[in-house]
Length: 382
Ligand SMILES: Cc1ncc(COP(=O)(O)O)c(C=O)c1O
Image (cartoon, rainbow, N blue to C red; front, side, top):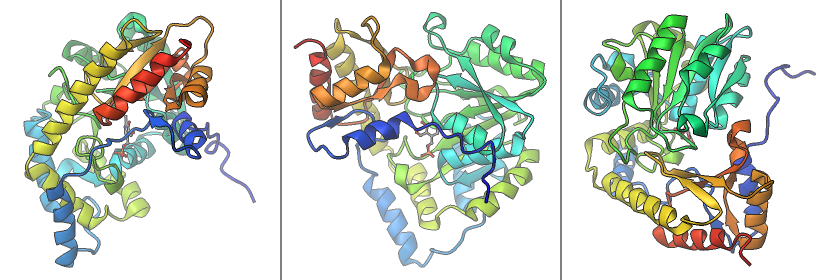
């Protein structure tokens, strides 16, 4: 019996590796986790329970509940400024990760490659390989302000390149791509006739007001394939609701992968997502304030230490540069866990360009974060 040749070259996820190392310990502070420590809002929980009680537990249409798709189109117009957003062009997916999977599967094949940020979310290359394509990293360098560099991208594009992936606000860097650069990247995709896959799963976790959605650069959806999620914004990681907004001619091809893979997203969870959109935004606003305060706490707490912080524009991570000669990300992460009982993610979990860096999450309570910072400060200080 044989396995598909290209698909299972699976690098271990550095995030999971650190979690597994720490599972046996109950004395550790977790700063590696990519989800909010806050709870899903009560009105969202109630909407799912109410839907179940009404008996709305059956399959929904594969593209999603019509009322949810309509509410998402409205959100895309109001929040993301997609002038041409329409419910027909929205597909509800099993989280943003599933949206990326079906999009990659639709636009890539064995001969094609896709440009992925390095450092970038660790699943991008796994998804590219899973659909049989070749992931091609583009470096995001400190010297370019931790933003994509169009000149660097130009050097990498060849006949096999099908798409560019951008992620703003970024995991793990916390950078948002400013409008002028977003326009430049869009033009580059026009010039080389590439799809622009824009992962905006952290869209509303925006500290500076500078986030702009790539889909807002088009009058009507043409080459931007936009991916969003309820996971991070509404503290709903386990509910598995995401969505994408696509050009009309992409809907049927993407549905031909979505339908056999998931049939539909959990129906009560779709009602919960609808309540998240239409109900009070108070919990989300409080979460945003909490992440903002946590951002200051870490930046102030680590000032002058061997961990230099990159002040995030959005998302809920802080990227730390390790200012110690010769120390690898993994060695530092392991020593922090073993000697100081704090779990962080080595930068190399996000691609080779992450060497020399660590990622910590600020989506936790101020109390735990303060303790985590205290433990980070102990590194090589005692
Ligand atoms: C950049 C990015 N995109 C997509 C996802 C997937 O999130 P979900 O599938 O929960 O929506 C994550 C999760 O960590 C992420 O960091």
